[in-house]
Image 1 (cartoon, rainbow, N blue to C red):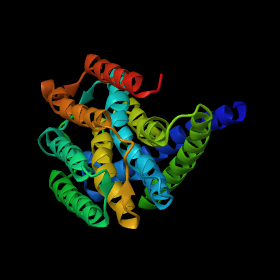
Image 2: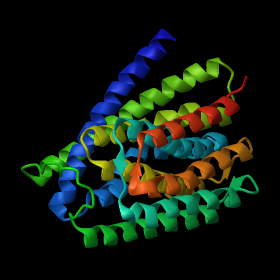
Image 3: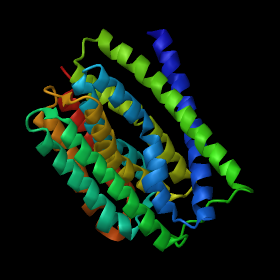
Image 4: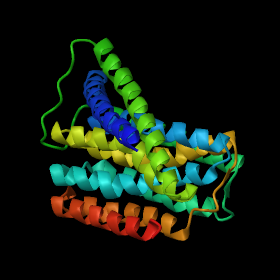
Length: 312
């Protein structure tokens, strides 16, 4: 147990170091390429920080562990909004780009509502996976188009991040940051699962809690770093984009590799993800600022969900 705890501590250090590199490189690259910081947060950063979820869900799918694969995504989406946005808002109230309220948050809610419908028979097949993956292709294309139209014009008053001397440095920061994030996340998941299994916890609960929280650490680290660096578009774009990517890309790819059977995921788990997705829209809309009090509310709601979920 002491060894597992030591590895978990080392993993957290790696995650924050990787997040710093990812935020710095992607922010600079966005301005250099004439794209908005929001677009980079919704796509490059969001997809990059979701790579641990992708690796874990694909591995679980190939091992016929559908509960872990699906639970990882559902749990991560709830964790992203309840914990990560909650903590980020408490550190630094987040100004919200109008595009997130009108387009991206409703899309995140739409795919959250679609998933339980596809899983009514507790199975996600290859055809359904193909539909989901087509959705992420369309969403990415839309984000790039909108990002180019917006350019570097930001609606927030936050200072722009610095641009590095050369795009090669930006790419190096992004690649190195992602590599460190994946390594740190893998260490965290492996040793967290080892601790959980010693407690006799089911695969579904492991996927919804330990694995979901572990693979969401890159999003947590990246959003916290972005908030501290006063880059709110990346902080919130990272979360909303990750939630969309988790369902459309990760479950789409995983179910195309091997159909997912997830009987251990309950109605309460789907409901929690949907409720958090629904709450996100009015919370963002009020004053177009996610306040500290609203962040505390999200954290409290996630705590209640965790209390109901964890076996007594």
